[in-house]
Image (tube, rainbow, N blue to C red; front, side, top):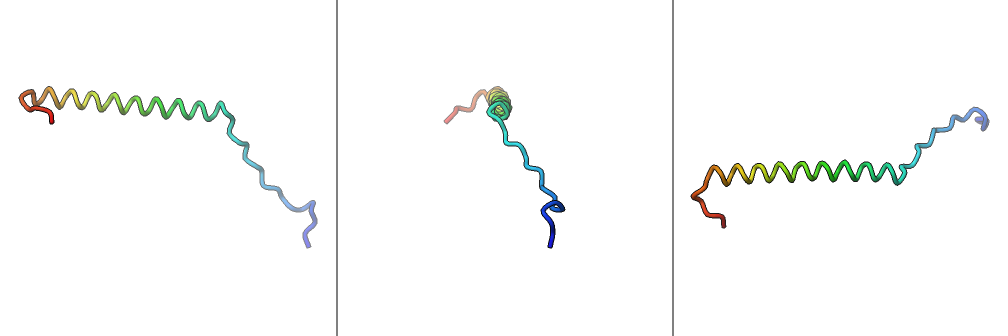
Length: 56
């Protein structure tokens, strides 16, 4: 039988704080804004390339 002294404990990971979640949320928001900007640039390029085509 193993003694309790010989058992190695697995280190527990610290839980994330509210500040950590806020940083992650801000990064995801910035990433979303960046992709939104890219979609606007693409839409502008598309409309400039085909000026005679009507939008449906």
